[in-house]
Length: 247
Length: 211
Image 1 (cartoon, chains in turn orange, green):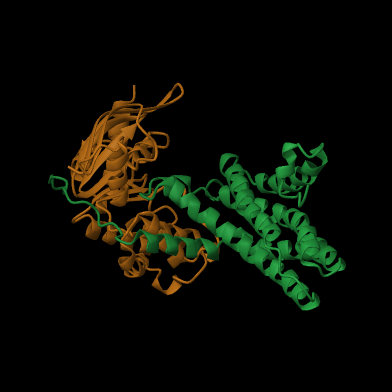
Image 2 (cartoon, rainbow over the protein chains, first blue to last red; image 1 turned 180 degrees about the horizontal axis):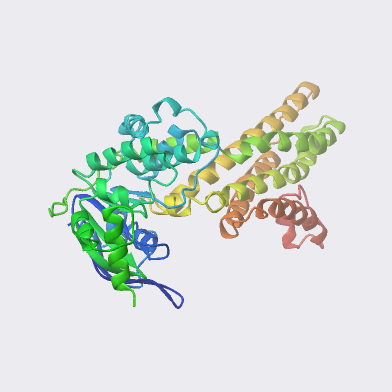
C-alpha cells in the first residue's frame, strides 16, 4: 500500500481538524469528498508531509515520514497541488516547473524533457514561455498540476484540482488522472461529485474530521437510492451518507 | 483500485548536485530583486562615493580610503532591502507549503536565493570600484592600487544580504523590505557616531576606513 493511515488525528489548538482517520490506498485514483471544513485539506497536508499529525500512524510509500531520511525519499516521489496555489509572478511556465523539478532533486539530465512533457500534458505546451502573471486562473491551475507531475510521482495529492477549469479542461484532466492512476496512487480532494464518479475507483467521504464512508462510487450511489436531495445519483448518495452521519 | 504493495525502489536522484545547484542559481539570478536594485545602487554609489572620491587627489591610498565607507553606505540599503524582499518571497507568494514539501533541504533552497542576491550586488559593486580604480589608474603617475578597502566594502555585501535575508525570512511581510532598507542605512550611518577612542569595538564597522 502506498498510503497507510491509522488513527490519524490533527488538532489546531482546541479545534480537531482530523479525528482518528483510518485509510489505505494503493495505485489508482482515490477521491476524497466532503463539505467545507470537513478536514480534507488538513488530511492531504499531512499526507504531503507539510504538517505532522498530532497522533496516529502515517506510512507513505512504505516509509515513515516522521524521520528525516525516509521523509526526504518520500518527497522525491511525491507530487502535491495545494488548494491555493502560490506562484512567482515573474517566472515563465517552464521556469516554474523546472524550479520544482530541481527542488524535487530530479536527475538534472532528465529535467528539460520532463518539464516539456509535464507542460504538454496539461495542454500548456504553446504557453511554456509565458510569464505566470499573464495566465488566467484555469491556466495557473494547470501549471500547478504540471509542477506536481513533473517528477512522475508515485504518490500524487491534488487538492481541488479542477477548481477554475472549464468543462473541456476538466474532461482532459480526468483522462490524465485515469492515465496516471494506472501506476500512481492519486488522492483527489474535491467537492465536485462528478469528478469522483468519472475518474475515481475508490471514494471516501469526510465530515467533521471523520471518515464516514469508504467504498466505490457505485456503492456511494447505492446509498442514495430513495433519498430526495441531489440532482445526480452520486450526489444523492453523498447527501444520504452525510445526513445519516449527522445527528 | 488495486491493492498492490508499495514499490521498494528509491527515486532516481541527481548524480551531479553541483550542476543542479548551478541551475537553481541561474533561475534565481534571472528572478532576483537585486537585479532591479542594481541601477539604484550604482546611482547611489556614483552620487555619494564616486563623486566624492574623484574630487580628491589621484593617490591610491587617499581615494581607496575615501571610497570604502561611502560605498558601504551606498550599497547597504539596496542590498539589504532586496535580500529582505527575496527572503520573504515564499510567504508573500504563498508557496511555503509547495516548496517545504520538496526533497531539497530548506537551507539549500535559501542559499540559492541569497547567493543570487549577493552575486548581483557584487557585480554592481565590482563595476563601480572598477570605474573608480580605472580612472585613478589613468590619473595617477606612481604607486599601485590599494585593494583592502575595496575588499572590506565588498565583503560587507554578503553579510548585509544575509542580514536582510534573515529579516525577510523571519518577518515575512511586505513592509519588512522597506524597513530593513531604512534600518541598514541608519544603523551603519550612526555606527560611526558610537566610536569613542581607538579602543572602541565600533572601529570594526565597515564604514570606518582607518582609525
